[in-house]
Length: 343
Image (tube, rainbow, N blue to C red; front, top):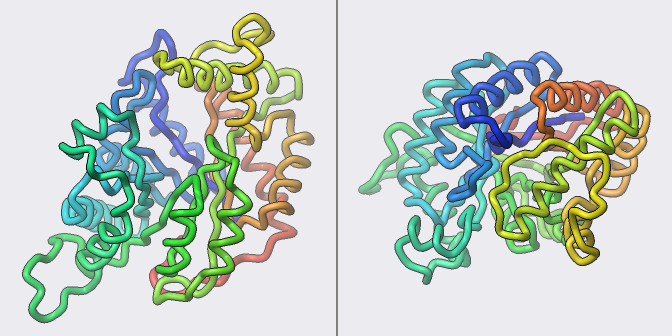
């Protein structure tokens, strides 16, 4: 059973971005020791509290400081960029760290309308052009053909695995059509998880890179030595989501004994909805919840995201998750992959 980490280079309240980058690398090094398959970073912009805007550079920072774990994007928001630039960036990464780079693609701007205008220079691009942009990107990353006027150097023919990521059925159906692995963002938008997975599996068309559907599901994870400790630590991501929906800076804040008085009923419902598939608890509780989630989704891989205020609590949470996933592997078969290796 494969298990991985999504990192946003979170910045804690009272901390610094330098500290955030140092913690991300330290987490990746521990994850490598604990058997995690991949460590992904996500493109976000104009968000005080998230420092992963220059995603490709951070991927290189983490890959340079580790040796075996796969490192990639979860994801690069393709409508923000010229596909040729992304092909060249990830071709460069693959050349520097061969066999260890993943390219996960999304279609949101990674910020608000102001961000979209600043990055895309126009608001006419809504992300609906993702299929055309993806087709162009895949062409740049494929071996060059006769008469091709523009080639990604480096990038062409390097077989960097491309994933489609999303929180709706749009990317699920596109991933199925193109025969690509699919990652669902259930760590913050679980509403359409089961519908997206169903459509992806039903419509999947085998490709040169993937013989059968491959589903990765994002899962918020807070694990600790006891259920009570984990529940207290989970108030940090709850406060972060609360700040997000209020339009406030989303620095990771210290946990509190109770959320009572910090939110109203409507805000609580929104936050709890965003965290509907969160796995919170001590080791035994986490294992039971992981087994239920795997039974419900039949996901091939889980990708955990953990927002804890103290770095040591984040490390402990993901260490427990790794212990649980190693045991979970005993009852899950390994998927068959053909073409460019996903692992």
